[in-house]
Image (cartoon, rainbow, N blue to C red; front, side, top):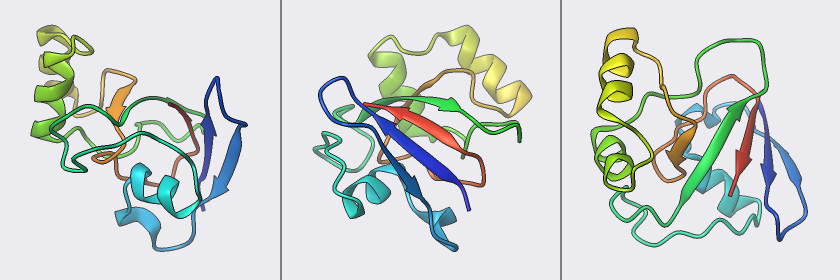
Length: 116
């Protein structure tokens, strides 16, 4: 079971122990279920309201699910990922940026620090 630590400069840090079977849930859904106030709007990966910074805390390697095409487009529009990083990500098949959208990031088995 992965641990997700949610951290914010204006809210108290909170660690959530993701339940078995949560590997299809987004970080936003987990946050909402645990009353963690991550801002969101469209919940469809188009507005960047739920922009978060993610750091892997476990030693298991790659960070959660791959970026969706919508996520890549929005992060590029907000200058959070470069063309070079996008190309590297597509070649190496691992995310190259700590910036993600909470509504698009699907939790896997690694422990994460989510800054919002």
